Every structure is written in structure tokens, then in C-alpha cells.
Length: 114
Length: 112
Image (cartoon, rainbow over the protein chains, first blue to last red):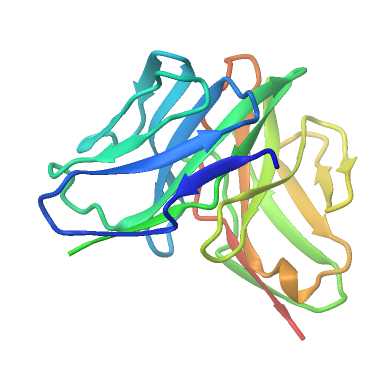
């Protein structure tokens, strides 16, 4: 099946530990994104990458890091510098289609840090 | 910041049409209107998008006013599975894969 895979679905960590969230897509999409969602809120952009080996900070990049070594993969590391890391994390990818583009989302990873 | 305004919540009876409004009074000429929905604890799902003409697909219809300052998403026969948060987003098309900016959306509750 084609799509975006995020693993694991639930993740638990102790405060002070770095943790890496996986995002893989087999849609051959050029661009990939990471969003964070807190309860009752909309999605906020953390980082995005339009091509391999390039990425840009979003609105809330502090305390996070990413890499884009392969087109299919865009892992997100939540570092100990992130003050409130407990949240629902969503990965997305997109591809241009004519004059518009279509963005697709993965199932999300719910991270709990205690 | 999101460029759209949506009511925080709406109810709809099962089997009836759900009409979700969205205001985007500052929309630019090259910006499309996109609708996504998010069922609880899942990733958002694309529904439909349009520029200035009305659009219809198997999921919904999108009605955009002539001045493009507002739009309405119509789910013609709402079911309980349509209960979700619906996001209206405007985004330019000529700037590459620009990230979508999500507001808080409208929480639609379909009631049996």
C-alpha cells in the first residue's frame, strides 16, 4: 500500500531524554512536513523539507531537529531542550499536481514525556 | 496565523446536509481554498479544494462566493462517521510545496 508511515503510534519517554519520531513515505513526494498538535488546538508547523538535504524551520522549531538524507524519510528528533514535548505529532508529504498541490498526512505519533 | 475564520462547533442531524462556512476575506488571487478534516486521534484527511468555481467530488461540494471572500463545504448526507474537526485553509499555488497553515477548525458533531 502507498502512504505515509509513522511509528510508533504511542511513545513514552522520561524527561531529559532525546527521542526520534519516524516518518516514511513511498508516494515519491518531494516535500515533507512535521506538525505538532496539542489538545483542542490546530496543527502547528515544526519543520518542513522541500527537497532532499534541505529543510526549513517552521513556527515552533525550537527544541526540535530534523534530517532529510533520503526522499522517503524525514525523522524528527525531540530534544531535551523542548520545554513541553508531550503532544500529538503529525508527518505529512505533498506533491505538486498541476497548479495546486496535494498534502497527505500520516496517522500520527502520540508522545508522552514524564 | 490562519487566514480563515470558522465557527468553533456545529451540530447536524444524521442524514441531513451539513453546511460548514468559512470566511477568508483577505484571500489573494492566486490562493486556493482547501478543506481537510480530522477524525479524533487521526491525521487530517484531504476533502476538496477550489479556486473560484464550485467543486464537487465523492466526499463533498465546495461553494465559493463570487468575490471569493467566503466559502461553504457541503456534506450532502451526513453520517455519524462524518463527526470530525473540519479545517478551511487558503494557500498560494505558485510558491512550491508551501506548508498549509491550520487554524482551529469547526468541530462538527453528527447526531443520530
